[in-house]
Image (tube, rainbow, N blue to C red):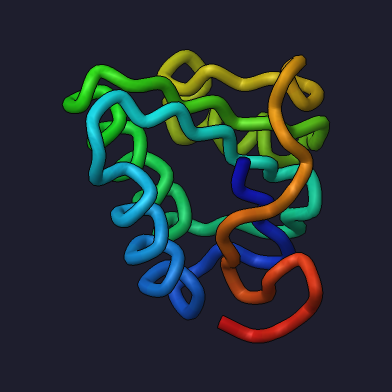
Length: 112
């Protein structure tokens, strides 16, 4: 499980992309991105999510996005990505609640 927070934008996308590339490098990655603390996402952030999705699918894995935000769901819908991602309103059963990767900030507030 990866908890993302604050903004996923042009400034934070490169570090997030590098981290997600590491997490999706192996066979059959099963990645859950918790977007509930995300307040903003731009096209660079959407690009990182799409890249992660493509890498996961190429390795026959699974990517799930967790968000209860109408803003993020609306952004996905307007970008034509609503049906592309598996979007869940809450954390799936059996997924650990410990964050494993940052965006602009880690779960403890330390910068990337």
